Length: 376
Image (cartoon, rainbow, N blue to C red; front, side, top):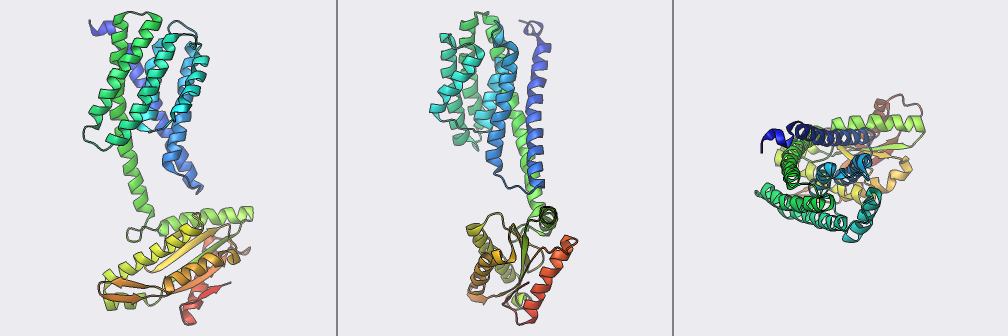
C-alpha cells in the first residue's frame, strides 16, 4: 500500500488541525491566567487548568460531532475526539468518578443518535475503561523514565479496540480500519511530544516569573511584586471606595545581628521572621500578602481592611515575633520588630503617598523606643 492510498494530504491537514486546536488551548489558557493575575485574583492553577480543559474539549468534541451527527460517515472524526479524551485523561489528569461516566456517555449518545446501537455501548464501555487506565498510569508513572512507552502501550491497543467497534458498527473495510488506527497511533505520539514541549516551556516561564516576583532568601514576594500589587489595590480602593491598609515593619537592630553573629545568622533571622509572619497570615486570611521590600523591611497589604480591622492580625504578628528567639548554632538570638500601620486616605494621590504615611508611622515607632506599633 503506497502513501498515496493513505491519503497523505488529509492526514497532514488532520495533524495541523489537531496541533492547532491544542495550541489554541494553551494560548487561551495562558491568556486567562494572565488576565486573572493582572487583576490579582487568586486561583489554583491546576484546578483551573482541569476545568478549563474539560470545558474546552467538550465544546471541541460536540462542535465536531454536530457537523456529522446522524451521518453514515460520522466515524471519520473519531480520532479528533479520542485525542481530546486522551488529552483530558492523561495530560490534564482529570478524574471522573465511575458513577459519572454513565450519565456523561448517555448524554453524548443521545446527542449522537447512537444510543440504540449495541456497538456504541461497547465503544462507550471501552472508552470509560481507557479513560480510567490513563488516569492511573499518569499518576503512577508520571516521572518514570519509561512513561512515554507505557503511555503508548496503553494507547495503541485501546485505539485498536475502539476503532474495531466502529468497524463493526459502520462496516467499513479493514484497510480503512488499519489506516485510521495508524493515524491515531501517530496522533498519540505527536500529542505526547507536543504537550511535553509546551509543558516544559510553561514550567520554565513559571519558574522565571516566580524568580522575578519572589525573594530568593525568604520565599516571600519581593519589592517588584509589592509595587504591582500596591498600584492595583490603590487604584481599586480609590475607584470603588474599598478600604485598604498596610503594615510595615522591620527588625530592630538588624545590623547588630549581622555584625555580632555574621550574615548567615542574619539570613536565618530573616527566614524565620518571614515564616512566622506567613504562618499567622495563613491562619487568618490568605488574601493578605507579605512582601520583603528591603533588607530587613517587610510590608503587608490588607485589601478590604480598615486599620481597626487589621488589629488582630497585626497584634498576632507583633506578639509572635517579639516573644521568640532564633536558634543559630549554639546561640539564641533574641529579636524584636517595630511596626507602622495606616490606611489609604482620601487625600492620597498615589500609592507613594500611602506608602510614605505608613513609613512615617514605622519611623515614629523606631524613634520612640522600638518594639512598638504606631497606627494612624
